[in-house]
Length: 358
Image: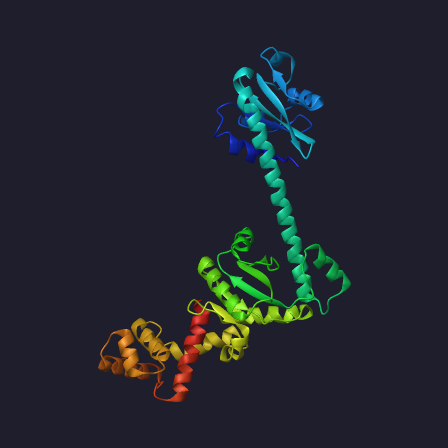
């Protein structure tokens, strides 16, 4: 309950407010942490008396001669859920330090309680992660799975949807994102999925428009990319998970939220391995990779559906300048953007390039 690391953290937190020397001991009287590092690991006989009496002990100057490891001041027992777990001591004239000694004990007990509940929450979250992993791997909803779901208050009779969120996330992000997610029924939940990813198990009870709006807000809040699997019955949640992975792979900075059901060409392109994609980029774009202006021009040309006037306006250039650049593209790549096969080849090269760099 009261470890060396926690005792040190408490000392570090409170010594900025108190000028006097502070110690924390365990129930064995050994000093776990002290603002005077030389005292750590020493026996403090005053704390043993304090523990025995389960009450405050005032240590006078004379006691320093008879009690091992003590200094003039006060010792106060630390309790957690009515269980005595240690002692906090403050060095100084007892009349002077008594006033804030009790406040220090209260602060210490609050920090211990906060640490305990934080660890409990982490323990619950890690167990929840294990449950979700087992759920995704399961071929059916067994009684054991239902019993575990009941512990976490997860309804396995309701339609579910897996959503993967990728961004600058850490383990602690789960609580922040959960608080931000506006879930009136409190049935959705997040877990940390590793590799800067969060996994959201969404219980489907509203239409997709509302979900899309919430995801857009979340995307803005987190600056993340999001892949959304399809809504499925609980025993098919692995399918929704696989779909969410494909949708996430198809997402990009320009298209950060992707629903798997909307995938068309990219659904097929994902089946092509990365080495083939790299080789394709090399073959198509090797002669123009350093031509940033030309690359940007052709990218905008594709985005404008090959409309000459629209592209020139978007780039704020003269139409003759655009014609010149497209001719240069043809010369360097042997791709004539007036022909369908060249347009498709160029589009695929940009698609793979964006995938490779995002």
